[in-house]
Length: 508
Image (cartoon, rainbow, N blue to C red; front, side, top):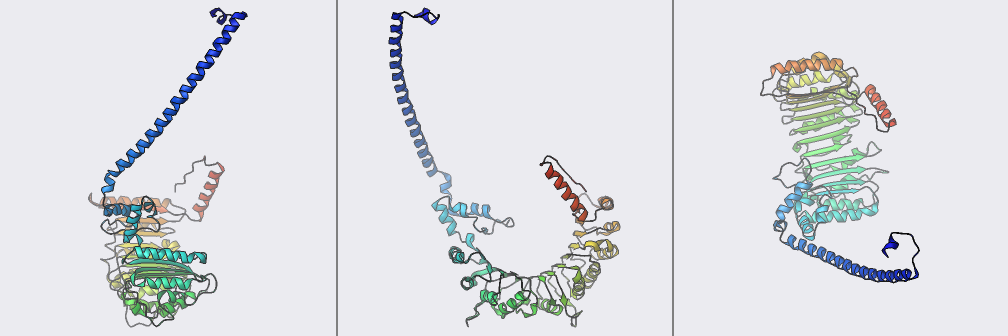
């Protein structure tokens, strides 16, 4: 029937019968072939599945012989420490603390790793209890914290409690704090007052207010207390009740109290403190602070943040200057209305070992502080020790050119200097001591051409005085003011209108 394949003629009856027979034969053969293909495909699937199972078993057997299984738990823990360590912990020889919840991924790897993490006590020394939410979760949080305490073995603990005065389980929280008091080295307390304050809340955390048993915090070296409340007298009364016996804190060295008013009511081992942070102070007696500093003769670092009104006589009644022989770091932040207080305080201080000093005016111009600092340096005889100086004078910077020149003559060993304000007189840069190797100038005055010119001249003059072996790092920043901020907002709005297709750069 080859001629039928190459033409359109009508087949004969015989040819039609032959074609039907051949068609049935093809169907029969096709069915057979499809059956064979299905059989082969099933075999391929079975072989593929078998191959996968064999490969899985091979991987398991290889894992048994893996070098990872021969690593002792001490090395595995060390790798975990490197992974979860805080950025500021760069001393590899010291045990690294784990951030809250950071070891959970390692605990989910295997049962052995779970047990390894649980058995390493250093991972469980930080307790962070935030019980300001629903009171129903408080007991669960305390239960989980108790497990962490058990896993921390006998190591010193770092305890942080953020609580609300309206939580009905505050007595349970206090009981937990008392149970770990003998092991707590750092205690951070943050109180949120939402309605009527619990007058004995802080006292209940630090001692047994209704018990004759004296709770001694033998290992406590760092204590931070902060509150957020509507009532301005809340913190004052709370501190007076919480600190009634200084002997209960024999190891206390670092104290930070945020928001106190009348600090004279606080009975604390001031003489033992090396670091003290008070702020933001509101409506307190000048003499109270002077008395506290007089008792803190071993201070090495003092941080004061002063806002609101200051009462009391100026100067305080004293027979001699207040000397803090070990103080190396002093940081003072103040509102413009309290500049006279800072001036008077500096006038009665003598700091022979001061190395770092920072003064920041949070609002308004500061004009008198430079003269006070100059007199402090002269009176203390610290010209050889002062190394780092930070000044933020706001609008007063442009009016302090002569005073800055005088002050710089009293800091011949200054190595790091940061000056911030509205504008800086061009001649001030030339009076900066030659010893300065790290200089930052931050200005907010919108006209920057004068500053650029004087800054370039300053760098050129210093480049001739430096040897090839010495280096200096200098930076000039222009921070946003009302004018530059408005320009940035307009540019951002313009960029938003263009659906991000506009590339905008503002170079001052």
